[in-house]
Length: 414
Ligand code: DI6
Ligand code: FE
Image (cartoon, rainbow, N blue to C red; front, side, top):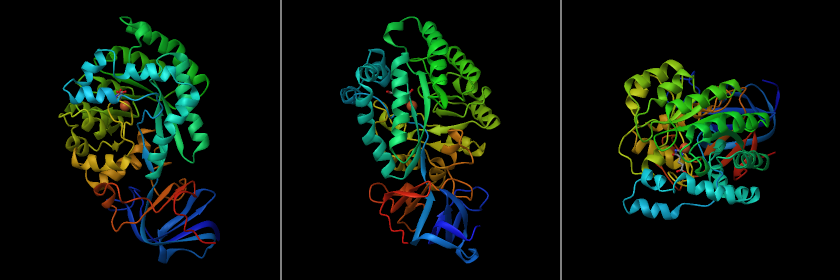
């Protein structure tokens, strides 16, 4: 390490989430962390800290430091809300029935098309602020409520604009193949032509998306149609993610694994062979317990088999106006344990290391390690198990994005 650093944190325990450090959280107790130029430059036991003059110091007071949290699957930019559908579903209608009657995603498409860019931005802000207040420093935002060129671009530009104004990293994903827009009723293949020939090339030209996603379900697009979207994404050099097997088994996961997709998301209905295919391709399983909870599903993703096969499991909010209007990644950690049987350590890995992999940011985000950007959260807790266990009261003491304090109370000195 250099003899001087921008920030030196001592008297802290680090849940590094670095798999090369033994133990569930890659924990380094009584650690010191040095930051320079927005990056971690040294991390280890305090007694091994070399001499170092720090511009600023922070006494961690025995609290725990984790990587900044990563929400790897959100639909955070949208117009309107769907409270009336919530009531219909409580009255007994299913998510698919609401969708097939012109509600569901299409109701949000109408509201998103009608909203100005400014209105979309203003509507997204409180959702983003809610995630950031919990220590989220990186998140993904999908389009998919435009389903026409202009509105898909409007959504993605809004996501990019949020990232310019907030101290957070936002990766964007084009989900134009989310639902069939009404003007293409009965002509899904022609809509896929539009996605492949116009929307995705325009999005790629403006560099508005880091990945391409699709909704592969009977109420959306078939495996064959999604395969065409994948082929088109590959030609544009964009990685793919797939909303797969949330409502039924379709073969989407096997297709995604063949395409070396970054992630398959939901996957309640996958088979043993699908799990093996994911293990083989290194595709991350993104578990979305908030959608499972909101839709009162009963089919669980096969967590035990994913674990046994060594598939990385990420956890995310799926924040969207239909199946998960819940802007809390911390609550998802709790649900991941209570509903899906993750351990608290798996839940934290799911919103750090594995979430980074699901975004193609493997090894550059999602852990505390020299060389990585200093996205870090200091928590007033005695054990990292508390993160998944407690909901509501345990708040970040201090949040760092690229080494700068962006949330909590700044108690750095110097
Ligand atoms: N799966 C989901 O969980 C969201 N989209 C998707 O493809 C739900 C979107 C919505 O209901 O608005
Ligand atoms: Fe989703």
